[in-house]
Image (cartoon, rainbow, N blue to C red; front, side):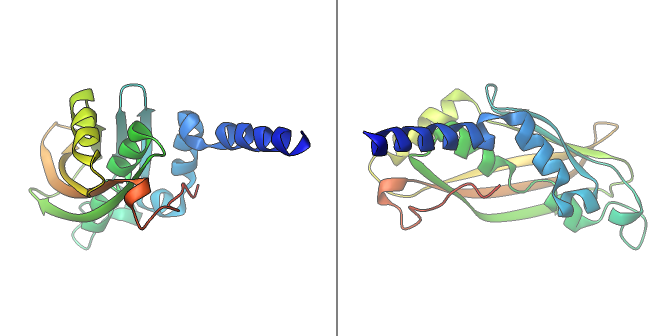
Amino acid sequence: MWSSRIQTLQSQAKHHLNPFNHPRLLTALFNLYPPYVGAGVRVETMDFARHHIRVTMRLHKLNQNIVGTQFGGSLYTMTDPFMMILLMQALGSDYVVWDKSATIDFVKAGTTDVAVDFALNQCEIATIIDLARDGKPVFREYTVQVMDTQGELVATVKKTLYIRLRAFSKSKHQTLRI
């Protein structure tokens, strides 16, 4: 009797302490993460119900390159790991999700603050669930755009994500480490 009660309490605590169940807490944790603080990256919106995250980055002395524009590494940093987070949250614990690869195409110099919007739709989530049903790995490519304050494209980031049913994955023990 006591062991089942302890297991129930552990399960409830795990649920309540999981930042995925508290987007405001997860946003605060990201905004305190030292690499993001140093680069000026800020999570503005994390809305799991709408599968949307908005990230901004101010232009300041700590993230300027040698010619005074946004440092390319910081532009990439602001895009990592938010598509993975959206997919992990949308698919739930039955799936393993990893960033597999990424490329960035610098379109113009970032001379102002910049922003990125990450979004998933229900059709994409349903497609992934269908493709992963047989236990084989699924690789999906997502493109996000880094935009300046005038609405002009600064960079395009393409990310490939690995998705697989946890029961078939070698990464069965992947967990949220926040």
